[in-house]
Length: 258
Image (tube, rainbow, N blue to C red; front, side, top):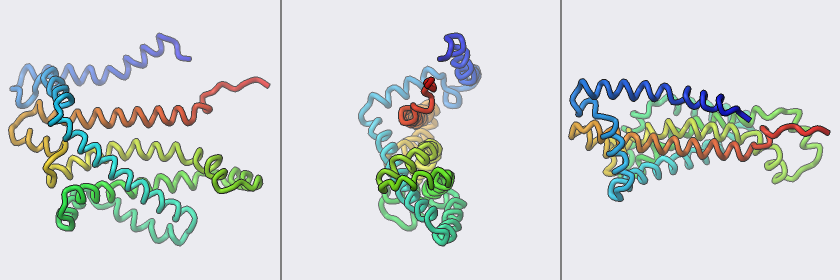
């Protein structure tokens, strides 16, 4: 258990960079007009107004739904591809180059392709989220499957477990940490991609609202809408960390003497 002094020191270390950034921003706000550097109080006031105004908050929920839907689809397809590649070298030789190619295409290019290929806004955004996140999920899950020790795998097989027992006792504990890490990484990437997609092809969402603030030269509003995605990503990261801590609490348990 950490000592109170160590906990306080750690909290101060985490807060120091943000405090420096806030001080630097406030200094800029004193020396530049508000449409360039608005006071932080005005930014956080606008962010709070968005959260409590139903007509505004619905745009936040729309963006969050698009992120989660796209990531869920990418995880299902990417995980399936990873299982195929893990079980078959031929599948890995076939899908590997395709995934590498998809990963090399810039997100903005996928936005252009989606606008040309699809008519509906939601179909465009889902497609963009899917193709930009799928390769990362596939490679991360594949890496987790390959990292399972062969000796341990063979030892578990010697007990003749059922497929369900093998999955619960061997596969899931081995790959779950990598899967949760993949979700944490892809959440940040997805929040950036969805904003770009909404900027050019949506009539609602955080990206659409950012475009409105840009047209009005409202920096406080632009920052307030940006903070909505930051809050969502931080909350999602915290939930994933809590899930991992709970699922693998046995790792931190003290060893008992025999």
